[in-house]
Image (cartoon, each protein chain N blue to C red):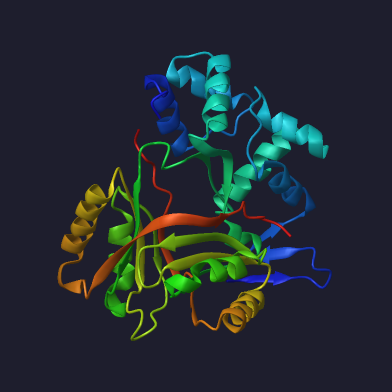
Length: 150
Length: 175
């Protein structure tokens, strides 16, 4: 972050809003930024390498591609936390898992090919940990895709 | 969700949109990112054996169908100085959630806004909104702003800050 200059920030701001589907899209964006295409590509490559940007490209709506997803919460006793983490993380269907400071202290995201598999994995985790899992799939989406100003 | 898998399991029908093998090849070729080359779509086209025009046309169709949300850079919140990332959760009346969800989602510091199921009495919250701030104190001010917006529709809320990433893998988009 300290290494970012004004142009890096301009690039991040402009590229969060979208990118053209044209023959030479980088050249097109570079003109808007007042730099050369080569400079844009070099900077973009560095921002990705330094992990200031996690990714650049089309953002697919995974759910529309046919998979099933869910957010799941568990109240894990502190003493048991490491063991439960190990069990939950052992499933390839668990894409993310976060600890949060709350009674519901473990939150994982399941990504499976079918809705039935969501229930199967959750039941299996309940059986192995003896803890109740709270399946909280998205029922409705109101907004996704904030653009952070930098 | 309106979708079916054919008997071969190869084709997915989404409403009236049909993803064929070529679309799926494009998705495979781009799901980890766009090539950092002068003519990125031509490069993808070359690897699939179609023209750059066809790649652009198909990606445009997918964008119109919402399969591609947008083509964009995804920042690492933390690296940009956003260290107060909280999952705010709200108990709002079910009959008003559509209207209120849209209002909360429209706030410029909310990145995702969803309705999720309650589990009474353990979990009374049905509206989730992710907020991004530079630190926790700033995040709590944003929570206050949402509470003010909801007014008497706020039947209780909480904010959960992440303390540790236990696992994070890239999601595979296609089986």
